[in-house]
Amino acid sequence: MNPFVVKLTGRILKITSNLEYSVQILEIILKYNITVNMIDDKVGLKAITDSVKVNKELRKNESLEIETKLEDISEVSIIYRDTMMVRRFDISL
Image (tube, rainbow, N blue to C red; front, side, top):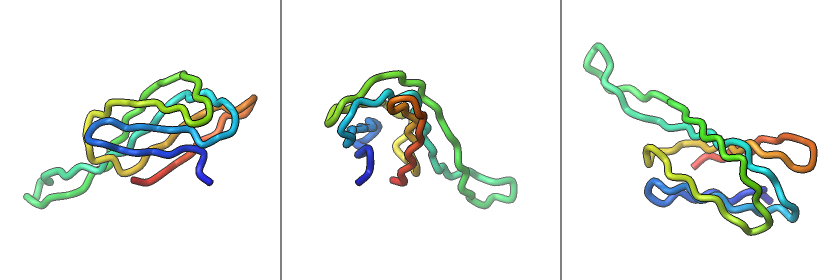
């Protein structure tokens, strides 16, 4: 079972905790894939990232909503602390 459920609706990213205990969400890293015009008039794909510092506690079934800059998110990384260990959860959208 995944520790978090991640849903994107428009530009609102909703993260819900599936864990049985409280965790401290420290940071959310968003990866976007955007199309760019290259020098030779071709269209290319470029990956960019955005980091959002959160520092919020989530209990079981509690949610956190973040407004994103773009709708085309390819991956979300959640950096969180449970007890004394810092962990990272990556999910592709």
